[in-house]
Image 1: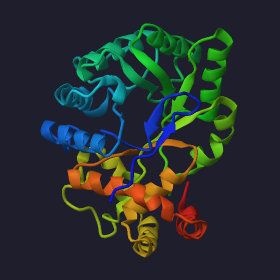
Image 2: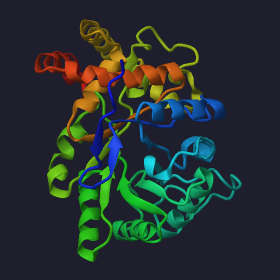
Image 3: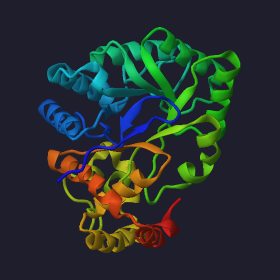
Length: 333
């Protein structure tokens, strides 16, 4: 029997998000069609998931469009779910010989105010709950970006804003600018976090949790599938690693030492009566600084298995955690 969903506050804000959430990177449009998106979102919501993560750039806007269609058809009460989007890379629009000057790889004010309107249209929403600066922009003054994000909230187009894959110094600089000018502060960060990628969450950001109340919506808890064990004998047909659009992931997915460690983790998982994927997800969810763990799935069965990680949480005793660390920590960056 699936245990009830756990909810955590998003950093120091009053907003509560489900410990497990559903993301759309790679999967929506690329691997999952409209009916599959609707089916998975409905199943996630039935399991207590209330946070659905997206980004303007995912599938060049099609991921947002599919999520928007699903939300329109599911007709949930708007108070009952949280939707995010992220801005930085822009959309692939315009002729190749006429590159977009102000709509690509930027966090300038003009781009951000245009981008949020496009996302609202695709998502069919009046506002987006969480908006993220998808990467830092060294070409735009942080103060300009902070003012623009503040204005998105003041205009009712977003409720909270945050960052994704920013350095601790960049996050602190943005927060201090907002504090100095009495603006809406960044509430959350969306970093990659899994058994083999730890340093940013556990060390670099360590002071930010207490100093500014930073919340985390972590992505890639299964290291793009490495921690499922499916890449131990190469790249399976139809898997994420076989997709040319994310070919940059392939080298990491085939890392021999980490795949060998996954084999050892499978032994720990068997002892706990779960899959190695559920073990890896439960490990991330167990970390107290994590507000929500973003799941990705290309099939309903995968999503249902991943949601089963909730049942593994109580089994992560100090001894089990020590076994996991002994296997994975030496290979973590």
